[in-house]
Image: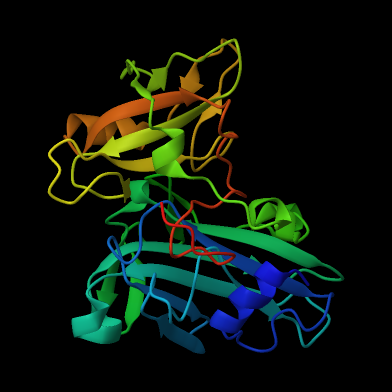
Length: 301
């Protein structure tokens, strides 16, 4: 077991004994493209109505959870059991505790695999802001029964566990070595892209891979400069080659999630920025953002 996974499991006490064995287990890796505790300060995990815990003080030195946060659920009966997992980002935890407003909910219905340890990634991302609501300590998706939010769109919440990859720390903790993506540094010289709102695409770069970020209008995401700086930018980095981020089409254009163009029209996104992935590697789902919330370190953004 990697050092990063031990740290995360220490922060997130597993329902049974996550990580104890290497068979019949599903490891849930919870990530975010937002900044904590600025954007949310409570991480809530619910499983099958039997496990419900809110992890607080996110981003603090004594945080109850760090990101990526991993929690393992293993089988006591040779695998195959159905499992329903809800993960929520809540705010105002210092005042309202476990019952603060819900910003994001992700729900997954799947089964614990047999004879292996599978990886299930569950991102709490900006484009799904507003996807959840709370009723006391319980949370539910605004997408309706059997649905959940992915990149701002409501999609079926059921996932066939046979399609999940085997767990590897390299796919969660920045290659397994605790590397992270420094959003403010990697987009320091980024330029605004012209967005074709008809197809929600931007021009690519045939010379090499690029990184893409959303500049938010409401100061969500990872910010540069001081709070009172009028030129301060707050950015959300998108994952490359991902259903939760962007993909490069056959013609070389970069396909953005449709929710991006919807939020541009609603003035929630101020600009789409791009930068060549040269000095910085390309942002992927397995490369977490740098910040005091980081599970494998505490580098400031």
